[in-house]
Image (cartoon, rainbow, N blue to C red; front, side, top):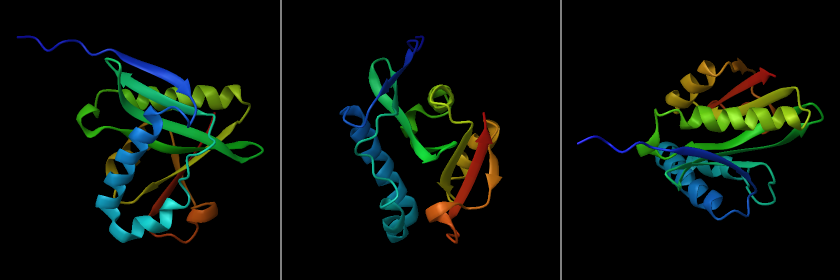
Length: 155
């Protein structure tokens, strides 16, 4: 029997959307499993309240992935909280999310993007490189943190 087709939809929203904290809670659990107590240091940099620039991906109307961005400086936006449920990975959902975020960032007038991921997230590192991001020196709160890998991209 054939597997039913999956419909992926992307929605721009804000942090108050109940699907966003639901997905972020899954992301946080996964990060704590990978990094243990070290993740506590990073938690303070990942606050999600009051964000007005959130993207949620749905697979057949079920929340399956997310990402957001915030202003880093006057010409740079920072992508945060990129996540796709493990069972939905490798299906183009993350590429759809980051594509929507990049479009929105460009609309907001930011020519540059930065982001941080962890050194144990090799699939994330490969994904960002595939999307045209370049490894950059660690920035801001990630300076000197050996488990951080930072990326940048010019739009």
